[in-house]
Length: 472
Ligand code: ARG
Image (cartoon, rainbow, N blue to C red; front, top):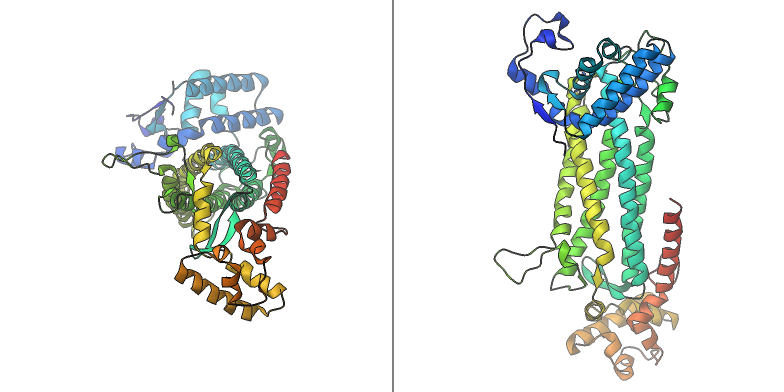
């Protein structure tokens, strides 16, 4: 974080940029209470970027002369550099990032600095700043999702033939391949990626030029500013332009779904690393120990990500509630949008990053997974399907296999471990070829259709995924 400090000041209202109509100083507590500089200083770069484009546009339409534009450009560049080096003393008396930067600019370059705010308002400024900032973050997040997906695809390819029990109700259901399981996670993230890019379209609209709420009487060229800032277009209604925070809510809802997915991956990783499952090993550097129990190696990263999901949901509810019943146009309430949004972005990026970093190093324990798959009669459905192929109605087959399973429970053996004679006592249509379907390999190989768990299908989906990731 920057070394820039925030300082309280004893400046009077006369010194405030809006001080003209005020007869007494702002109450010191109110000044601090209403300020946002403590957190919106994070938008300094975007605020400067917006000001540069605005100034260039004002020059194009003849409101600023060439010298004034040059002064503003040089002054803003210097402030950007100061801020990057932590040399800016942000002032609470100057309330927010916009007035801090404007005052600093005027201190530096004099009269031209005072002209920058022509034809705009902090209301359209803040709406623009957040969009510029969020757009950058979205692009970074899309990259982190891609990185995590790449890790999953590689793991899926490596473990396309590795068998583990698949679960329903967290009870052993049918054998599946580890690669298939990884590709299920991949698909969730694929939808997240699409949602994120879709939400970016609505972020990438420029409110600047809406001014306070009604537009401005200066002959501004919003198309020009919009192009300078690489927005898709200017917003079409100034009231909506300054008050719309849908884009932040939509982003936070996309983030909530991503976190929900990560919490599901987390839960499985936590289960799988436990001694009871023992399906995988996470590298030591992604785990921590216990201060009292020397034997412990805890899966902290997935646990923490699972926990952090809650704060992102919380931010979504905060933002929804913030906007509830707000009359048009800008209201000070909106200042409360920043912290939940920043926290959402930070939490999401941290969670995606830790998963993307960790995924390539997940080690499977095939023996252990196999043992678990052998324990829950995972190929019972395969035996039923086999009987159906031999002409038995499915309901009868279900009944026959149920009896075989009961026998297995009693004699402590899996279906594949029974002799042909033992199996034949449940139906005489059973012959030697039954063992082709009762093995774990036979079971997964048989599910060889689009979306099935057969290694062949998993590898096909891996190829599709690789092509799609390469095309990004
Ligand atoms: N700090 C304000 C915010 O975050 C900036 C806009 C303030 N506009 C105003 N008229 N008070 O929303």
